[in-house]
Image (cartoon, helix red, strand yellow):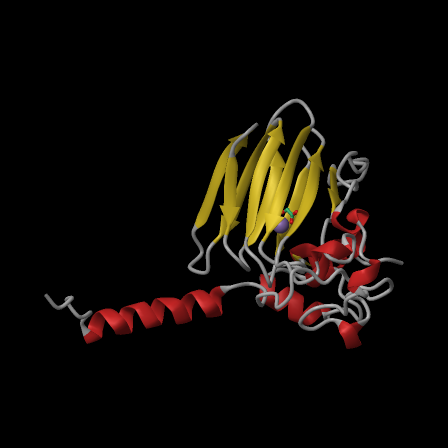
Length: 226
Ligand code: GLV
Ligand code: MN
């Protein structure tokens, strides 16, 4: 008995799904088991940043290259936002190079906020480990999605969406945030708009936000250094 043949339309759907999965990945697939970033090959060295950092010779790779202790302690939250973010991207953790993942630790004092920001190259999974956080994002059609997320619970932020975490409890809160990119990038909204260097002209911001120039000057005074 001959096997039933898949229809042409089923084949087209399967091929389209495969193409979609391939194009929606955040980082390219690795071509070797690992490629620990060579010392000094940080992404801040723009000539080396795409798509991966250069590898150190495999013969020199040691177990410590796959180990990161930077999240064992909280970052200080003693700042106007009440937040401490400890990045665990490929710059901090060279063993992540080519693996398409990274992880941050976010500490929030009571009432603290990790202010509105977005990641151009990655979705973000927020896993709350202690306390409770209001976590939210705004979609491209202006809809606001938020939840109070408690210990052991998770919330996902789609790639590129403006989002925040706010400590809605009375004790310190902690989350691990996981990314499907070794270098998600971050655009902090207020900092980008009011702290850009060189500065965005007041007239552009005043018109964009439909406020007067004094309001823009006040906002710039909070985000521009010096
Ligand atoms: C949290 O939003 C983070 O980017 O680590
Ligand atoms: Mn984030």
